[in-house]
Length: 445
Image 1 (tube, helix red, strand yellow):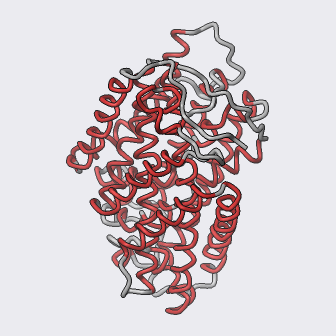
Image 2 (image 1 turned 180 degrees about the vertical axis):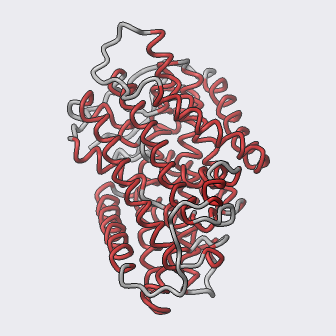
Image 3 (image 1 turned 60 degrees about the horizontal axis):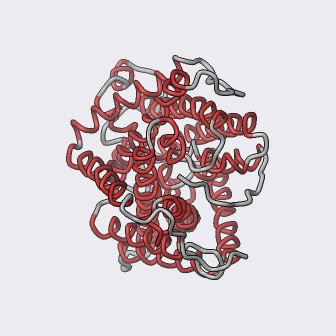
């Protein structure tokens, strides 16, 4: 495996932590609670669901901190699993990231964008709107890095503003129902129910991104210190934010009205601001989802580009234009996202994407035991707080989730495993290429 010759841009703790927050706050928080209330009745259990999801993510972040500090190269699970286990498993992890880690979430964000937009303009096609926003973002990022950056920054600013408006305005709302978040017998029973486990898949998708800084560990200043801090601080901040936002949803909208609904933000906005306000909030949420689609369209192709640089048979994914943009990788992710949009429902994509991504992060977290066993002499500037309890808690909680999800949603789980199998087949096929071939690319700026 060869390391691409790149001159990394060094970033500090603030930027690394901001990257974690930006990657976590996306589609899941505004779209998944409608599916959770189908499994859980208790507001206490629903809020605990998000608190537990945050604790699990923190356990993963603490463990990733040790792995990234000990093996400080960018690439995320693709690099870590290759180093800890075998390049074939690393390739499969990279394939999972490229498909379900980026193309799947791109489709999810786009589907949600379509649903929120048609909540205001019902005559439009939600599916075609979803495809259109992916095409637009792909065209912008394939044309100019500068234009893509301005586009991304503008819509990310709207995302932050929306969250502040939601939480602040909810204090003045006058809901038609009341809730209690105190623990009850029913709420405590639901904490150990299969529905709680399945709901954690939706929550784990909303928390996806807690490991974002690991993808650029090679570009972080003093990574042995700043990588673990950025992962933990970013995850802790989002955990608090998510619990607050879900309290707003439960406080403003009766659970039976949210059940099965994707556009929960529209329902909450209607209570907080009136009917017209609900439509305005739906448009704001649609706009913030543009930021999510844009970020995924920008980041995902860089993973497949790196895989193309390492795998001879995938050299075409490493091809860049005269501006240094990996156009082929952008087109590849665009095709996958459109396939997901036109062949799957929102919750189907959410389940098999969540199932497979959990599997990938579990293998990576388990690698901390492998690293300590196989390479006890390696320099460890940071060690996992609470080891071995912390990684074991992460593994046990996620194994519990996977078992219940497989039993409850076997079709989607098997689709996820099928995508893993495709990744394995691609790895062995990729070994047939000539190892000394270089990727064809235009001059970099």
